[in-house]
Image 1 (cartoon, rainbow, N blue to C red):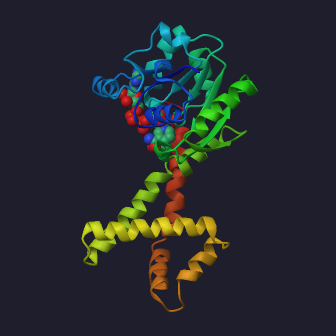
Image 2 (image 1 turned 180 degrees about the horizontal axis):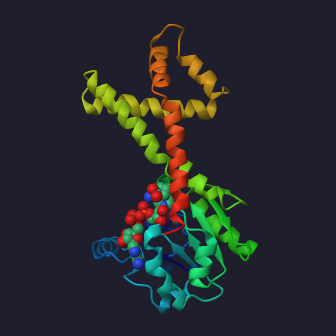
Image 3 (image 1 turned 135 degrees about the vertical axis):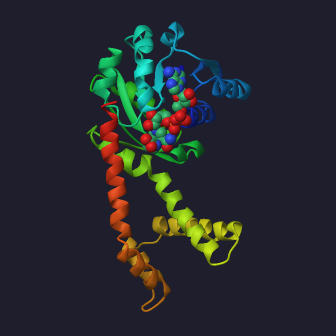
Length: 267
Ligand SMILES: NC(=O)C1=CN([C@@H]2O[C@H](COP(=O)(O)OP(=O)(O)OC[C@H]3O[C@@H](n4cnc5c(N)ncnc54)[C@H](O)[C@@H]3O)[C@@H](O)[C@H]2O)C=CC1
Ligand SMILES: O=C(O)[C@@H]1CCC=N1
């Protein structure tokens, strides 16, 4: 397979590296289109693929074109891509917010798949929600699904509208996790630990707790109950979280991310 990636930042390269790792594409068949000179020089030094700075006629030689520029930069790539794209090529967009209909219309091209990954894709531990325009046949859909699965796990969604919810939940999700970890490390620092020790205590707690969520045959409420002894320390913390409506604030934040994803479709 020959793959062109437009926008080779965090996510574009997370995808590229996963494909290379699983030998799903050869470096000579991977076109990396990156407008930033600094970034493209780094990609050339890494010998990550064939690096160019603009979309040109050679893009037409690739089976799949991945759009991984920021949604705000989509307008800057449309015309150049529309001018060279051939009818049999498949476009995979990982841009937040931009609906498939808009991509189809701006590129004058029906074969569009839309996906929302997250940054753990860099380690092959991502989760990606994806959906496809009705014009995309099963063979192409399976090919792209296999590629996405090199970055972690995936879930196909019939309803494109749910991709904005995926964006809010798992796309942005890693940042929420880091935010909570950061607050816990700060609490550790305030209680007298240096940052390294606080970080070790928190990271190992998060790792172990994640495995308990995955392996213990208990609900989240039961897992909380198993930690929070009656009249103990955990209860004191949870009471404070409730008083500050922490859970409601987290839910409201995630809903704000969903609204923002919907707004991004308007440019
Ligand atoms: N960062 C994240 O956690 C996630 C991001 N996304 C989506 O992935 C897309 C990319 O995000 P990141 O990789 O984080 O951004 P990034 O800023 O790291 O990468 C975007 C790259 O596109 C390049 N670029 C901009 N205009 C260009 C053009 N006309 N031609 C060629 N290259 C161009 C930029 O120089 C930059 O290197 C966004 O649309 C975002 O919504 C999706 C899921 C997770
Ligand atoms: O913050 C953003 O807009 C992108 C989409 C999901 C994660 N990062």
